[in-house]
Image (cartoon, rainbow, N blue to C red):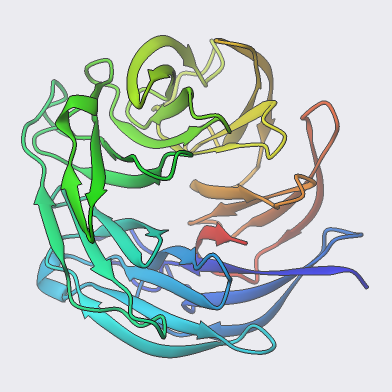
Length: 348
């Protein structure tokens, strides 16, 4: 049997009434790459591991515990053991509220905190363990949505394909904030900040392989922005709705991924509960289709490195769905399970 082993993060408690979950922590999951079936291999208990990141060599896994600042959120480090179970190594406190995303950058972990609108740098030692916080940057400002944009809300940290520029989507201020490393430390690079249409609320972004185009999904309007870049300076050149014209519900975009072949974009929308598929043109997008997922709270999904499978996670209905990606970019459901509780993140 040909398989691919990967990890799914989950919400394990409700930090806010009505928001959270009943998951068991970090799930180690095996995908049958012939049939699309999933099998849980093990679980690692921890509080609200809502986002996960693997080291480049896949020897270590890192997660944030998404909690209010007063509940002491942490960034945690694990060793990936033989058989893909996890061994806890250490953790460091996050002096921010509701850390919702993290990524690796060389020998560092970079974390975005939603509630407090800040970004943190944690160096790693030679054994993969987390060292104390090296840098913290607090975003400033607000935007036109007085309910959701009353303050900064950092939502994702992305590394540009050039390996130098780092961008942080901030939903609260309608900006993509730019950073870079000077020596061992993360520093702001404000000349490369990018403004997004007011009220959109940028949540996540991806780059094409060359790095001259970026694609930003905005949570508050479910708008997909196309950004064109010149030496790391990006400008918004087009916007596309990711919802059908006859959709009457609340916009709530949650995730975006580019197919490994660079030809397709996939966008998840909660409430609508569907994946919107676009074909990438030179400097524009062509809508292909909408794939309804028949779940509740489609928070995240990811595409296997070979580009053959898309795995989608539903926070509230506990549906984890495996789609076969066809040559034309369309999705063909092959497997569905409710055994993984409150799934919200997939990493390969």
